[in-house]
Image (cartoon, rainbow, N blue to C red; front, side, top):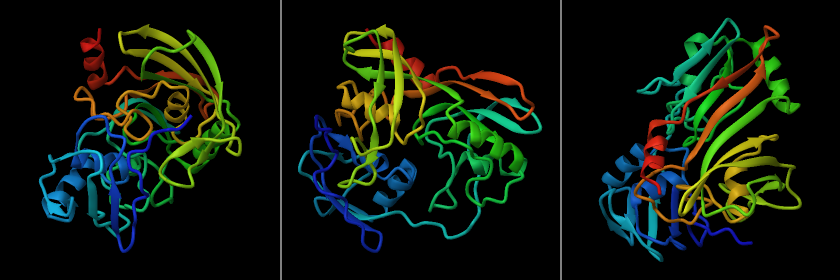
Length: 311
C-alpha cells in the first residue's frame, strides 16, 4: 500500500535552500501551514515570518503566508535561520504540571511545543521550560527521557536529576512503561480492536517520514474503538514500543490515517484542525521512589471542540 506524499520531489537543501513541487493535495492549503508540517523543527510563526520577509516563493513569486498552495505548485526558498547559541527558551504558555516530586515532573504538553531542541538550539521546548528545575548537563535534552511529536499533546514525564533520568530511561528501553493515546482517525476500522505488529523504518526517499518495512524495527500497537462517527473513528491506542511516528505510520498503513496529519494522511487540509488529532492520554510508570503511578491528561480543548462538531 502506497502512502501518499505531500510532495513528489525531495526538498532540496543546499546552503539552507529548498525547493519542491506540491502533489497529492485534495484541497488547497495555506503556504505557512504546509511549510510548518513539512519542516516541523521550525514553528508555523517562524515560517509566517520567513514568507513575509520574501524568503519563500510560490511559483517563483513573493506571496503572503496565507497564500493557498495547489497541486503542481512549486515552493522554493530558504529555511529560517538557526540560532547558534546554546540558550533554551521557555515557551509563552507553560505546560500544566500534573505531578512533581524530588525526582520527576509530569506535565500535560500542549501541541506546538517541541519536547527538546535539536539543531535549533533556541527553540521553545519542554526541556527549556523546566531547565531551572532539572539538574542535567545535557544542553538540549535536560530531563528528557522520552518525547512527543511537536503537534502531539498530552502526558510527558521529565527526570529532575541524572539518577532519575537513567532509572526512567531503563524502563522505556525495556518496554515496562504503559503508554495510551487517544486518536481520531479517518474512516471506519475493520475490527473493534486489533493488535498491529508492523515494523517501522526511515524512508530513503524522504528522511522526514517513516515507513512500514520488513527491514524496520519491531513496532507493536493495540487499538480499541471508543466511538464511531460518520466519517471518522475515535480510538484508544496502547503502544508497546516507542518508534518515531509509530501510531501515525501504522494507522495510515491500514488505511485509517490520523485526522489532521498532512505527512501521513490524506494530505487534505481540514479547516476544523491544524494539527494531527493525537493525544497522549495516559502514562503508567514506576518512579524512582519505587511507587508505580498512572498519570492521565484530559483531552486538549482544541480536540474536544472537534469532537463536538462531528456527527
